[in-house]
Image (cartoon, rainbow, N blue to C red; front, side):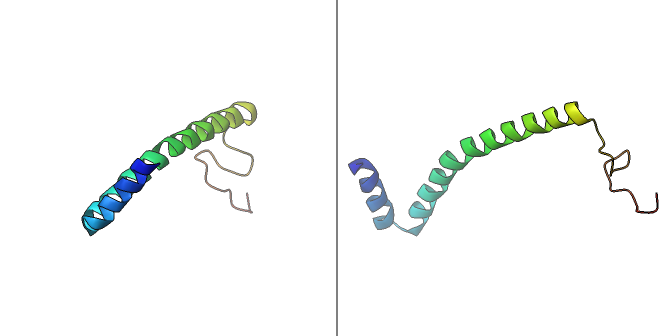
Length: 71
């Protein structure tokens, strides 16, 4: 924990751009794995839903656009 505090203190003391650089790296380290997990779960659930119900749904035409009410 002291190492993280030291890094943050050094980044603030060494200038604005170094501080922003650290925040960008922290954001990439935290966001990239979480986005990857979300995408994997989303694709799996989409595959499961299309496999179960077929594509396109009843309210869509062949390319996935909504059908007009007249049809």
